[in-house]
Each structure stands twice: as structure tokens, then as C-alpha cells.
Image (cartoon, rainbow, N blue to C red; front, side, top):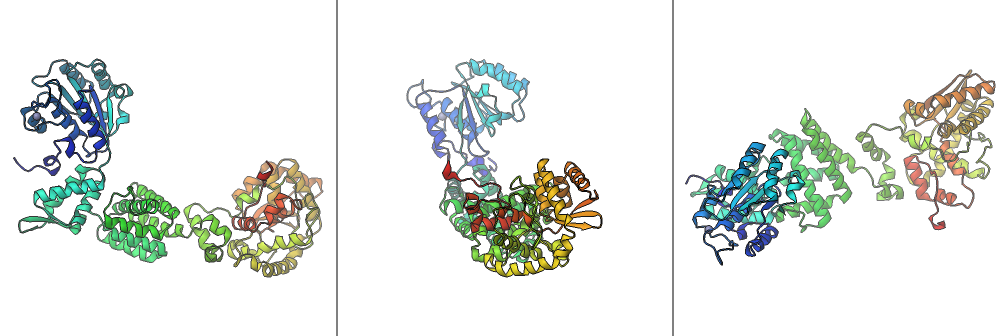
Length: 639
Ligand SMILES: [Zn+2]
């Protein structure tokens, strides 16, 4: 006999030799022992895990001529030496018909099969049809088959092997016994490879066999066919082929996991340049970006599983050394980070399949890992822990977010959502207060401090446009993280007040501006445009000749026009005319006064739950960081 591939040469001939499918073989052995044979079987599961192998063993057992026990009973284990067993093994038994349904899937082939099934077996007890890739059979063909399955002749048995059992019609499935095969465990594959290496006289280090087993990825056949190739290309020493990890990696075009460990160490350390250099070496060495991404997905997945289940978890189907490596990488990251990194690389891998310039996409994906690294967990950000990292470096904390998606106007959401339907037309800076609804309860002293304190740091850190404009006017809308949390509030406040006073005359203009603010604000609220009211209330109102200019900070033109829409504009125009002012006005992005902030601080009734919540440093911090507002506070204890 000529050369036989390992998968065929070592195909199990007894149930006991089939690796990793004990749940299937046990049931089938029982059925054979008790002579409870069904007329239809479905064997489902991934490729190369023993479906057709088991179908053949069943066929041998059913038709073996050396029966153990009574002649009425099939044997649980075929003898393997009788004519029938040998013919089945060689694939030329008259009464065991193997059909590749991938190529014989049409109605004609199945009709032929069905008609032939009516006749008794030529020699053996059963006429057995093994349909491989059974899900490929067309619906019409399945219908033709259904008749036979509904009233099967006593001598006919169908065994369907499929990777997609869900594609087999329910009418067929319900008439079959369904066995779902498991992926073969790493250790089982490794043991089999060891045995075969011994039998074949192949010299192989265990790490090399582990690599093959891993590459098999749950499929014995895949592992064996890579082993075939490896043996064929192995150097021969003293008449024995020698398998090494280096040679097998070369064969599979894979990179040692040590490299991925290093890449992820660079990610953990935030070393973008080192990361790019390593990638450059890999690409120059001829590794394709998509193969690198695919291997990295696998590596990250293993690290994540190690994180979740520990080094010994069943979720890892890799060798002991690799488990240790996965664990080392896992310790560099949190579970969230690993999850996110895996997601980023998975997406990168996906993208690579459709893109030109694969290399750049992989580079981008890897850099994203580093940037994502800088995102802080919410709790950390709020509590200001983590060595103050979140507070000290607001820029890195927000930069990745911006890079992940289109840049977002800083104060978008908070500014449009009204805290309260009442309009609080606060003037900017000192003396700008007018009494309006909602103002009554706030004490004069605290709101000013509260109002201005957060205002300043923003101008310099977050909003560059505001910064440019800052010298001219009062500025500044929304708070950012001040350099050391609440401590610096006092000092900042003074600066802010000074600037506010200085700039006040320019901004406030004639007193009528305040009248306009109040009237327009109220009119908008009355007409149901609370968002617009709130937004404009937070802006700086300037009478520029006859034109009223409202500069709203932290919001792009587009968002502005969405909030202050045509209907709102109409109301503003009407209100201006009603007050005898020129109807010309402009709402433009610019610097505001941070009044949304102030409005919120003033609203709660003293001693209310809202006040308590707003006084909480964590809540204040969250509002600062996210430029958010507190819309409502629910006291769950009262329910
Ligand atoms: Zn036999």
C-alpha cells in the first residue's frame, strides 16, 4: 500500500479508540448491546472530530460477521477482521454506502438512493447509508428522503454527519437520533500525536507536538494533517524525521506567542513606539497583518480566559507553558481591559479582510490598545483615586474617546436638557443676577463661589477656542478637572472673579440685555422650548449695535441649530419685537458663562434630597468631569 495520510492510517476502528466523544460512544454501545437500533442518526459537530469515523464503526458493528452473543444481536465492538469489517474500513462494502452530500445533493441522487434502499442488502444484515455533509442536501431531496424515514424498511439505516445540524429540516431531525460531538480536548489530541509520533518513529519535542495540537483547534484531523506536512518537511537525523517548534511555526506561518506577550507588555507600558517597531519587524519578516491579527485574537482570548478562570481553567486548550504565559499577560491587565482589547483586535481582524493597506489598519488597531489603556474606569475617575491619574491628566483621559469616534461637542447633552422648567436667567459675573423663579432659595454667597469655581480650569485645559477668546471676555462655560480636585477651588475662584469683574462691562452691555434675557427665556419655556431656554441662558448675551449676539460655549453650530431650532428662533424674534428691540439676533458658538451649572446649584430646596445629592462631592465631581447636570433625584427610601 502506498503512503496513507496519518488521519486515515490512524483512524480509530473501535469505539474505545475514539478520543473525546465518550458521551456518544457510551450511548451507541448501549444501543448496540441492547439491540435498540434507530433508523436515522445525526452526528453533528465541527470537522475532523470523528463523526464519520464513528458512523463507520457503527456500520461495522452492525454488519460484522463475527458476532458475539446471539445471531440476532449486533456486536458492540466490531471484530475488524471479517470481510464485512475490512470492506467497510476500505470503503468498498456493498451494503455500506457513503455519500458525499456536498456533491450528491440533488433530488435525482436522493431519489435513486431512496429507490435502492427498498431492496434488501446484498449480503449483510443492514443496508447502511452514511451521508456526509448532510446539511447540503436540498430541501426537495430531503422531502424525497422523508418518505423513507417515515416508514423505513427494517434493514435500512441512515447516518447523517453534518457541521450544521440546524440546516437539516425539522421533519428529518425529529425522526433521527441526534448526537452532538464535542471538540476534541487539547490533551486528547496531544496524547494521540505522541502515540503516533512514537509509532511512526518521529523524533518530536513535546512543545512541537503541543503546537500541532493547538493548531488543530479541537479537530483531530486538522492536527494530523498539519503533522503530515510537518513530518514531510522535517529534517531527518539518523533516519528519523525530527520535529521542532521553529520548523512547525515556519510551516504554519505563525509567530511564537512570546512575541505576542512582548507586544502586550508594550501595550501595558504604553510604549507606542516600541510596539510599532516590533510590528515592523514582524511584517518585514513576511508575516501578513491578517495572520498576525488572527493570532493575536487567539492570544488575547487565552489571556482573558486565564484572567477569568485562572491558569488551570478548562477554557484554555493549550500546553502548560502557554498557560503560564497567558497568565503572565493576564496579570498585566484588568478583566475589562482584556475584554476591550480583544474586542478592538477582533474588529481590526474583521476590518483587515475588507481593506487595502492592511498593515496600517493593524498598526492603528494596536495603537488603539494603548489609547484605550488610558481610559479610566468611571469609579476611579469619580473618586479621584488612582494616584490622581484621572485628575492630573484630563487630556489623555479624554483623547482616546475622541479618537474612537467623531469628536463630540463637550457640553452637548448637559446643556440641552433642562433641569427644571423654570427659567433662571442668571447674569454673567458679579452683579449679573436678576431674580427669577428658582433663584429665591439660593443664598447670595454660595452660588457665586460655586458658579465661578469650576469655570476657570476649563478655559485653559479643554476648550482651545475658549482659550483663544478668553482674554476678551468673561468666559467660560464648563468645568474640567482642576489640577488637584477641590483643593484648588478657592484660588481659582479668585482669579475667576477678577476676570469676571474686569470683563463684565463688555459682556453685560446696557441693562436691557437682562430684560431681553429674562423675557426671551420665559417665552421659550412657556412655548415648551426648555432646552433652548436653558442653553441660551447659559450663554453670554451681548448687544452688538442693534444685533443681539448670544454666544454659547461648548457646542458646535450644528448642535446649536438643532436645539435653537426655527420654532425657537421665531419666538425669540417675536419677543425681541414685542420689547421694541431689533429682531436681529445671532446664536453662535463661543464662550459662555457656565450658568447651567449655577442654575442647577440654586434650584434645590434647602434640606431636600436634591440638595444633599448635589452637595455630595462625588456628584459634584461627576458633574464637573462629564459636564453633566442632575435632572432629578429619587429618594428610594421614601418608596
Ligand atoms: Zn467483523
